[in-house]
Length: 346
Picture 1 (tube, rainbow, N blue to C red):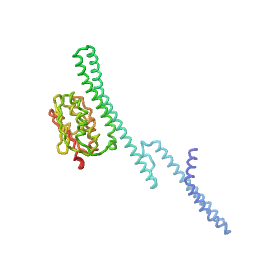
Picture 2: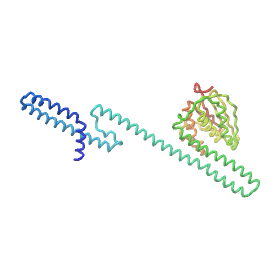
Picture 3: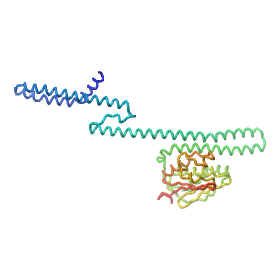
């Protein structure tokens, strides 16, 4: 009862102007009859009948108003699971509101779906990241223990052994740094465009910075480098192009055995990073840039996260550079970065 009275109060408030207008209209004839001293009998009956009809009309409208209000309360309890529970629109304005509400609901569902997918991908990635980073951490622990035991002997052989262990520890520490940098890059790629600073850069300068970072890895793994300055300038973002080159170098070193070699050179407008490593199976090549895809050799050696090449593809697409691989199992891989953006290579 209280709710009905509350709804009635809202109905009267919303329709107050219409009610006042009707009462004013019905008062015109009695007022004129009174002013001209005309008999009021006929107009009284007309006023009573008009007022009765008005009450019946408004009672019917209120019943429809309350029924619609109740339907909306039911739809509210079911929302957002059942948007179809909304009562059928009866006016053009109601259709507009329901269309807008449907669009908002659709956008909300898509946003929630994208958010769930993003959280799932992040959980998958971090789960894989934790698994991967445990390996170099465990290796560091073992190497440190071996170093402590060797130090206790105090012999010349022990000192040489410690130096060797320190080199291996630097290698494992470098791997940890790589995993951390890759995670930061993974987080930034969702809005990487806002981080771009395009300018004309010396391509050799970018390549040399990447090589300097990986110089210790070349030495520790005894991998030969064949590189002559390319003498080119490119319009790009220095930081992100260097990230791509570093990832390709990391893969090349990772899958190139001792006494193997890596060559860096230009093929027209394309920068090529070629290695003499284990190569990639032909059936895996079309999928190497997919997120999380490691391929047969990556699973075999358990060294791949399936994220590095995905990030390279994401970045080069936004830089408007092309990237692809050519490979043959047992002979090596060529990674191409097409730097020709029309205005790109000079």
